[in-house]
Image (tube, rainbow, N blue to C red; front, side, top):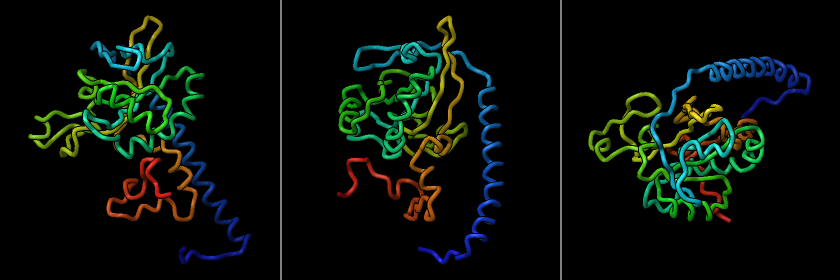
Length: 236
């Protein structure tokens, strides 16, 4: 596998304890960063976004399903696409198990895509997912949260993504946004992250990071696109 150094158990334990000091420091830094995230100011949502769901039209407030916090996965599935983004699907594979617990801890989860609801439902059924998934087709929602881009953006070749201007890559991109709702029913945007910002939601990566080969992404892209497939598309 590698030319890794082989040592005695005592020497391994000494090296492991030295690494543990750094791991504990990272844990403390991660906790501190999470606290700072919770202290970010909020922005009140004034625009009346309406989404299509299997049960009809829903507002952003409806998506909370009686809870005070909402996590949105901006899922890359555009109108007319035959299937969803592989990376978004990889992330979605981690949702249903966690969502069982989130629903009982005052947190709702929903995926939102621009594809029409009929196309969303077809792909969701194929993948066997249970989490709520609605369509923002005909709404400004995806554009306002900078995960969908217009033909004019494509012609210009520049878009704003991950809080900075960058080259146009695709008409749909991924991300995660968080919202809160107060007792009066007002909805607020509290947080968004894009690109690798929500990578920590990929539980499979956390497992791989424990292993000797790590993520082992050695293909041309050096990211999950080198090896991840839709879960019904792996050989065998």
